[in-house]
Length: 209
Image (tube, rainbow, N blue to C red; front, side, top):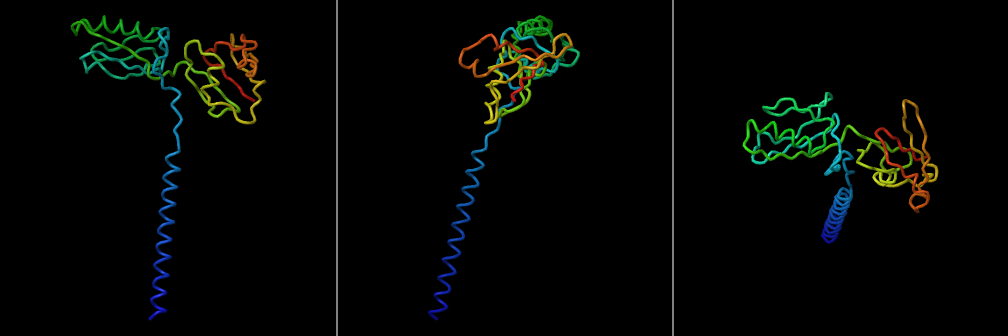
């Protein structure tokens, strides 16, 4: 009997130990999942600047105070127009958000008494630059007003350990011809040769070798 009783105790002890180990693994797994972070959407824009000109494929949020039927998020079509109830097609490309809000307000006066309209850009898809090579987050980024090479590189999450930061270059197409613009990150970050931190243009590619 004692032998049987001892075996039962040992089996219970082993079962409890296995259960504890399984719980520990489960907690570690949950902890690991909790540490996973999601990279921010590079297209998400809270305020691209008052001088930003709307482009094709940008996404706009139209807000009309107390008029829910006109409040909506709309994409800018390739032909440069957006579609709104009653107003149908409204030209958006080439206008700033403030200018477009004034256009929509004037059009809505035929249907709404004293309309209050605001327009915001939620996604910039018409103007992009690209960062590639030895950076943490290579890819396409929205070109914000007066964005410089340093600002674009800071958006890419920093460099890998293999990056040659003195030999970065910017690829740009000028009048149909490809040009290469050198950029020494070490000099730029130290305030030396500040003229090389140029303002970027649509389609620029920053290459970090």
